[in-house]
Length: 135
Image (cartoon, rainbow, N blue to C red; front, side):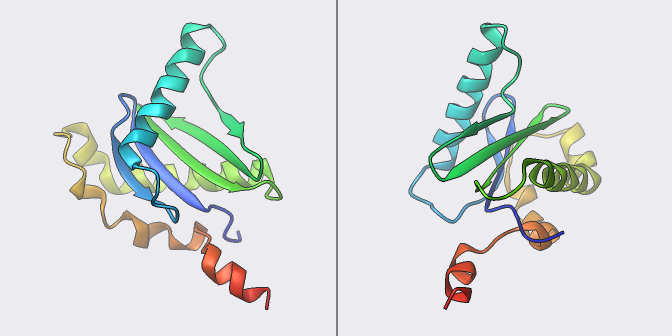
């Protein structure tokens, strides 16, 4: 499977960001986590169900929930939704494989998950490399 995921956030249901890999660091990750959680809670309160995706002009965001965690990614509009969700599920499965013991007694510390990036590198896009590959 090619690299189709640009950015990745893993959130608790309360909005705490356990892990993120983001190229545009202008947005505070905890602010983003709180925003997504509020949006998801709003959708549930309005009885629309949980948020599964949303679109911006050039980017689609996808949300996959497993247990009490939200796995959120964005990818360019040209990337197929099924492929993106398949990659996101694969990432969430890997996360739970690696951190099940920590998550069962999680104390709120996020440093435990810092090395997760190396585990999922095959799924992550590098927009800088993609830009230069066009030349």
